[in-house]
Image (cartoon, rainbow, N blue to C red; front, top):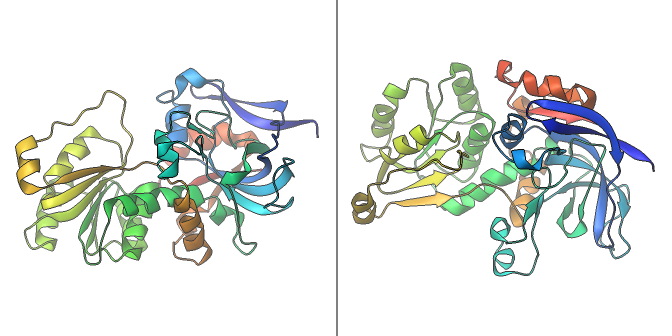
Length: 342
């Protein structure tokens, strides 16, 4: 193999299609020929220069699937030609946090497509221990959703949602829609969504929400009405807005929880009423990325059709049109996910 085509983000909002070296394959690594890669909200932050700007030039992309092109000499549990997805969180594998499946806290952690070159390219390499075989019957467009689904799997796991618990989801974009579907799977009820977009509110209802509110002034009254005046057991912020995080505190019941999920800027802070939080035994729970068993669970759920994926798989651009794919995202609210095909 010679070189490969890759979309290199050379500066904020500017991709260049370049021929670059195919990644080296270490003894414990796998080289994956990429089939599809989804555009994530994090990728959009990187594209706009709001995140990881110090790492440019960079090949982004971390929501991917593909087939194994080559294996390191020490890898025996995988085969060339095998369809796979991959956990993109690379930790040391031995520290306290890695042993607890909290890899993002590993001092040596790096993420494919964020801290190192990723999958907006023909090939990507990573440790073979993070590569997960995928069923042949599942289409590439669905397999490429494994990583974002793993994120909501982990959020549900962290929040310890139980049957019949009421949930408010702030934001009905791609990840908000997946949160709706995840909450329905774990038995939450009612599920109330809030988004300024009436189209995305409609899509949230189609995905299984019990109510969708597009007027922020109506939200608290609707939540109280649907929860017997108590407030929600759980509020998930899936946008990354300090204003919405502040709003969440007024939507939970006494003893309720707020799931911190949407990414904000590094300086964003939230004033919390400490005494009320203590006396009411409220809690704040952070969660950001699926890893380890979250990825396996996400793949199992997708393989068995537990998520409605139609709105996530319709928009696809070839690698040489990646600039257009990013620039038109905001004008295509009906496409919950845009994928790059290779």
